[in-house]
Length: 386
Image (cartoon, rainbow, N blue to C red; front, side):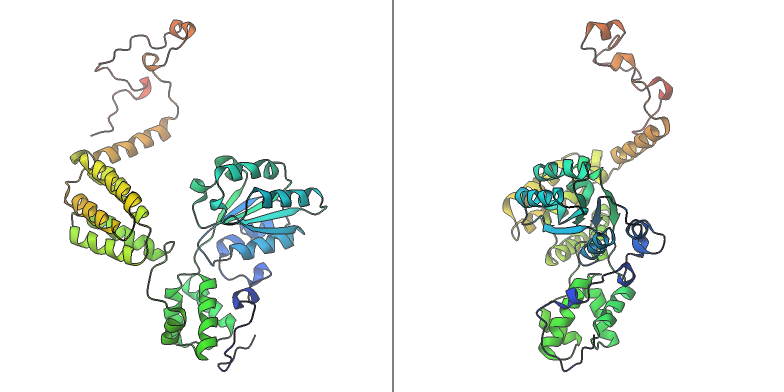
């Protein structure tokens, strides 16, 4: 596709759709999944029927891979968005599946937006193979997809496209972009190919040439960080480490950066609640009370005023003495559990709701206030809270 600088119009079909790959060989990125011999590549090329979830940030190929898979297994593809679809829409797909001789693939975009009842409705049809479910999500499916449904799906994690891969996408568009603008664009769009192509197409249509200034004007963009990208994790890391170092000024600076970038204030507040127990802990137990109060205030007040509550909490947490004893003790106890497995609970500590269990010694010898060792016999004497 040749796109000269003189072209100023946008096709009725978005360029991102025109350039969408139709085979694995055309896909840019995700080689850890679709490269030769990799799990998803083998599954697709062999035409294996199975349900799976694609988890990754926007614009990295989730829809593309779903369509390629449906074609590979010679299935009928039904695409729904969980943002707008409901049980009735799924019911129609199920009826079509029952009347079809071909495998029916339901591609459910933003699957995390389906509530528990909607996911429960899907479950028996996925379990019995009436539907092959391909879900796509930008959220961690461990938290957003019910366990029963998740256990019946393989999860594949997609990554943001690298700078080299984004540069390859720019080349594929055929637009003329100088090296400096190309580097800036790959940083700006955070591995999101769809956003990148859209900015290029819009800029070319409006200005006829693509420069950094033209892109900023056409897209009304400003430098920001992607909430699912590396800069997101770098900033929250700097924020936490600044509070850990009792440096309130630095912590407030990184708080301001996140708020200006449009970060979810509840995400910040949650991390503060965790920090209050992990890093302050026993040194000042009221830190958890304050952090929880900040979280509730953010819920009730909302941005922009809730930023004041966040700042208040950050300054307080940064000033607190730090103590990781409780956190370290938990980690040590987890390692012991991993090492020794399910050791028998001492009889004195067991629940004894029946006469039979009491006769077997359950609960025998237990005293409410005791200094005896309550750990399983094999690890008695162990200390975790040091």
